Image (cartoon, rainbow, N blue to C red; front, side, top):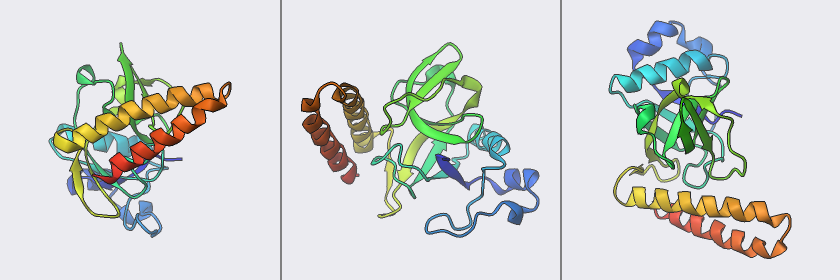
Length: 202
């Protein structure tokens, strides 16, 4: 499943690669009207996103999976900015191209020329991705339900973002223990409730 679909790119860049825009228009859905289908063009679109960010634009993508729920919910719109591999920090939310699709997850580690990521809802880490596949850092999210724009890199948005990161990490550790210890289940329930409460304040 794709992690997101392209929402905005500068017209001049998009037209250069896709002069017949209608050929890759998505069918209309509840929150993806007039978006562009990247499933068959993910490599090209990934290049466009990276180039747009490097030129100072802020490409936006619509989230279509729940791997970063509840911080990023299906239908939410995320905005990217260019970031160098060397400046990546653990916990940063980034968008990369994994060779098949666009993926928006948290950085677990960045060592050498590889990036490892994981969704907040996921137990397993994603496969390592070459640093060249890095497209940008998520800096803002616009809620589908409230239309509110939140900066995840400063102020209260950053605080909530980091708290959810730490709680998600603790939840993962607890889940890994659950197979051998049912006593940890109430802990997971409590963490889930706390994460949802934090996300609801944005």
